Image (cartoon, rainbow, N blue to C red):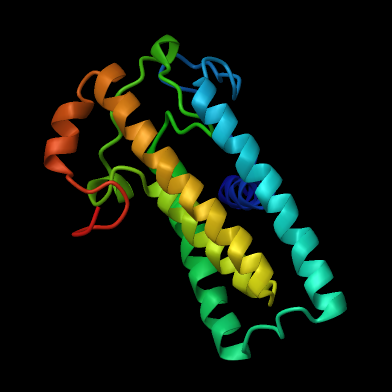
Length: 191
């Protein structure tokens, strides 16, 4: 029963973009925005507005036939990418007791570097999973206008990754050494 509940929580988080915080080593559960970086709140606000625009554009595109739709094989491939992104997101959350929806250092919880699970391969698997999710969902909406909005979200998450990485390099003890061991931020062998 406990495992089923945990999977449901992860799916609910993915669908509604709300973080499911687990108690840290001190047993406390933090508030999502406590200590969030101002630049991160700005980026996430723009992302949410762009996501809203994506749904509106997809609906209008469907209604008025602006772009002619996306072929079914591309949508099937996007469904596979969406499932991969969702699974990666769940693995990321399960592997990092300090996972947070916002960029913040959590000294009150004894914040330490997460280096297991997908963090063995890339430093920001949560952002990678979100990029995969944003692009795949846009294709699943069968609208090229929605794909453009999803691409904008992906670019914003790439920017966020660069800023988050810089913040962690400066503020999180042990992160610089981890960054030397795991040199890639999002895609192994690329960046």
